[in-house]
Image (cartoon, rainbow, N blue to C red; front, side, top):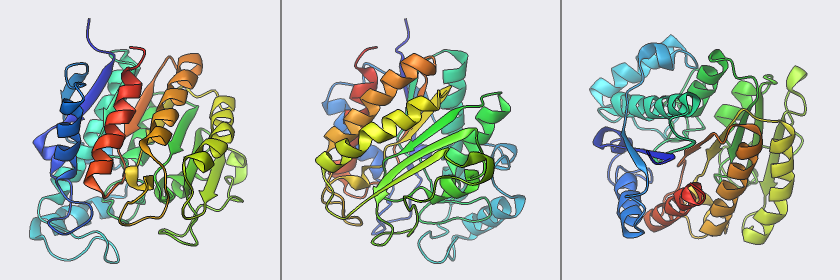
Length: 315
């Protein structure tokens, strides 16, 4: 019998990054894989190779103009794809396409019943918008997969984001969509990029009340996270999701060089455990997890390993 948890990896997926000295370097995947093997979990999952998204896949969320701009600048390797955070390094188009394609492939596995849980470590690029890159995020794999899930007939999709940064590229591009339930706990935007995600933002129009933002002050620790979690879980459960997507960014761990929250991996473990329980009740067990941010390599490795350990716990 095949393992019930699939993990995507591969050299092309690991190429997503912006060179030496940049916080989002290409060594993040290797750091995770080494820790994952040390924990003895590498023999318990179904390994899947990364897959490239097609232009048609990307165009389900992004404009053709944005896709072509990334392609051209990726060939030259010059300039930035946004105001300065996201360099157009050579080959970034292909690497970003593998991020998106791997998440789409994981979703296909879930819908086909091949596995019940999927983890894509280099993914969860939640700042990219339909028309442009932003905040280290070239293409928004979450946005693409949500559109794909809707095309497959799903009408209740839960997106939970525990990255330190607000997932603005998901929240705002689905702000009016009642099919997408967004629960986002993050560092207060008054102190951290992208400066969004106020508590009062609950969705627009027909989607009013379908979104939940929980901003936390700098220094918020596991106790703060656990206090917020009951509200988040109740919100997700009330949406009766058919699938749950978790962005498990490790930049909310204490000591990240770019952020100011103070979680431990126990917070991420708890989120994964409880979302698996919700999914078992409402979503045929289907949970798709993306690694998201995190710029302290040891924290990334240990946090993502803890998350996958939880995905494996009752398999």
